[in-house]
Length: 94
Image (tube, rainbow, N blue to C red):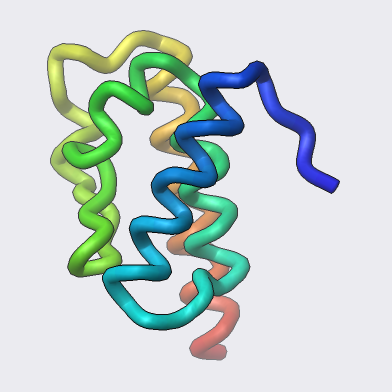
């Protein structure tokens, strides 16, 4: 069961998840699902979702960490997501 920060978080999450699955003709894996969920929490990362994550290429845009719109909260979330995914990618390769 997923817990949401509000209706905007829930609606945005399901919208982006559906968009991902339409683009890739498959369900999102647990890592992509977690990324979309986390980036959907804050209004700032929702507004700049496409700057942080490229759904079509399935890539995190690391340059987004240096964007002027980042607040301390969104920067923390962006860094947490980037670190977690880098760690998981390394663990999977090992």
